[in-house]
Amino acid sequence: MSKWCSQNPAFPEDILGREGTRSPTSTCLRRARTMDPLAKQIFKGVLVAELVGIFGAYFLFRKMNTSQEFRQTMSKKFPFILEVYCKSTEHSGMYRIREQEQEKWLNSKN
Image (cartoon, rainbow, N blue to C red; front, side):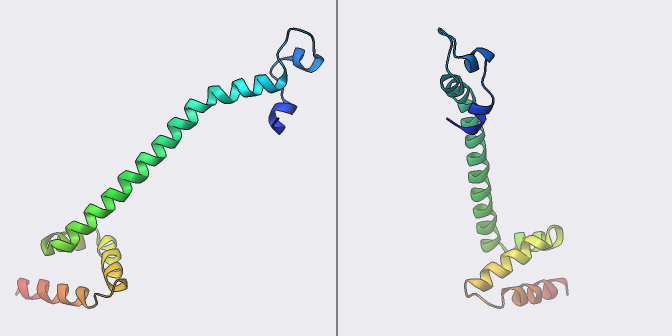
């Protein structure tokens, strides 16, 4: 029996132990079952949010990895995302991407 159930019985009769009443243990089990669907919904919601985040990050990285124009757009609108992309590619062993991109963008302006 959990600490909460032993300290907070559902009915005062449970404390007195009268015949025909439910025990504190069965009351707590019943309460746990009624909260179980809520816990499942919360878990499913968190799981779905994490999956959406993972797939979103994957597709964003894939788009940035394949499109120089998209990287340029990201550098103007969300420079911190481009910074994360550059650091992750440098961490994987592909260096000088940032410098090459800046040279290309400067040459395209001239």
